[in-house]
Image (cartoon, rainbow, N blue to C red; front, side, top):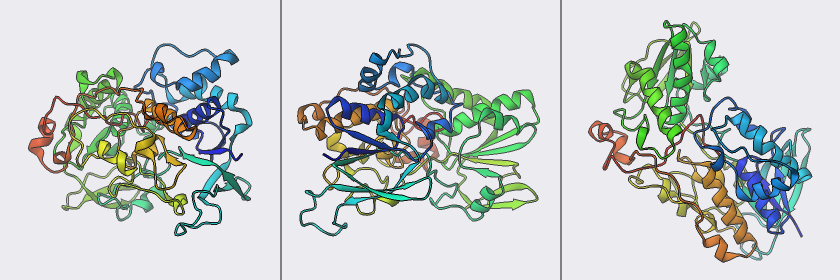
Length: 435
């Protein structure tokens, strides 16, 4: 029987493989990087806001414990500690079921392009893979779980969703980065002017690291440019957040840059002049010349290799349609995001699922434990255990903030937290989502 191909050896992909094995199904994990959780390794210096107990999948724990592995019990790990203490041992336990240097460049049905109905569901999936040596191979699969994440598809600074004029040139010049700097990189910016673009907690993480530099060298200047008309919930839910470390992060950022906030700034152009960068807004405003610009405007799913798979995606978020209403920042306002399973993640292509951060499309709301519940349900469905697939075995924590579409333009709603300030909405924390 053909294996179930899992795309990505990150937290959700490895957990999916553990669940498949536990259900008697054979996984094959394809990872484009040279080691497990290669995306997490790129932000290994960042401390997660979730404790260890919420960062370990239960089936993965059951696979690891017979090997002599012991789960870390307390504390909040960095990305690097998450890999060392859990993800790398899990990948090792899965052995040669995980292939590195294997980039998936296409998924389809054997002998059927996107337009063909006849006999489609009876055909196996075909997965086209490009290896690091440039050679390509074609694998057959009984099902496909896409857990490739969004880390390598950051959103641009341009307020219209496209790169601002001159943005790519600034990247090539090394003056603009779409990922937050490490602490070592932040230290090199002492005495300089840094602009951070973005309203999420990824931006807050960057500002928190830069605040340390400011304390050491008061000549360092940090500007936080927000697209929204007022600060609103950019600083998170504080003490009302049920994940204390997530709430504290926003409050630290608030203390660091209260005097350096620029609101309603929607970038249209990036000017590079004599080794410095000037951001120009759609309304003509210009920020003071910066030595570095950090763009933390979120991420988006890479759908390029899924052109021959029949997908049912929301037109705004590029997330599975049944899931999108739960996480859409245009309409989702008060109340916690619920856990989602196989029924929410299904597409018109039977046996194909997108899980993890990629399942949330462009929404900045994903938690690692959300992904663990997703893969538990999806694998149960693939194994024919429909009852287990339909169960919800996770209750997500509140954030203590309220979103809603009014926050984008209306200062009066943004300053009060939207329609009903005490109610919660999940927001992204750290330099990226945890999945």
